[in-house]
Image (cartoon, rainbow, N blue to C red; front, side):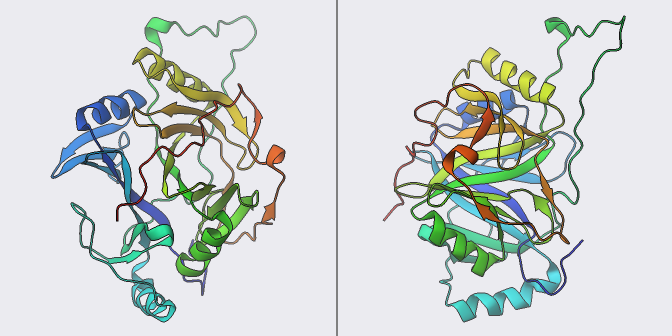
Length: 311
């Protein structure tokens, strides 16, 4: 469903990330359960059985968020061109290695952003969630030797660091048509898509400079979240956080730390905001905005160790 008479992006089409070691990136994302493919200039991230490319990885001296690409409807392309011009948004060339398709411009904190006509890849409904229990008199045992590997279904949301969460929220609302779902003042803000998306399509985390915090990937059960955490441990990626349950968004989670200090999240049963829903956006106290239950938070969970933006 498209919300009528609203100019807004409909999806995060994909993200671009620079990493210092493509083979280490391949090992991490393969362990996470993604379909990692060689493509010109680097690697591409797919989910099992899905034709859409959710992320592109490029070789560079250090890990750095390269860009974010948003999808728009074809009948909004001309209106978006006029909208960006009226706001005085600075047009830029495509970053190194990225396709020149669509409109490239300078986003908040100078982050390169792209909008292009693309099929909607954000969910059109709340994703399926299963809780399976064994009946009385039957065994619910799943042996480790037969445990399935968790394979995410799609990118749920993307979380970035920003220098000013409140100002960035206003910018993304005005420029891209995203809408505040919930927030906690300068600490964090969760933004959804006007044309229907999970509770947040984009999350903003306060920091000293821009960067990537995590990419969140949808799975179908808390069992898959737990199995995902176990498969990351077995692959040698033992730093992370979870299993737990968030407050805002309500999803079950496990965050696996990548080799460069950002995270990939297994996420299950996140809230969904349809295109015809007027979500009651609100600001919440920090203790009511993070997690309901789970292990203690690692001290560096929201430490932005990504290098500052290039000059």
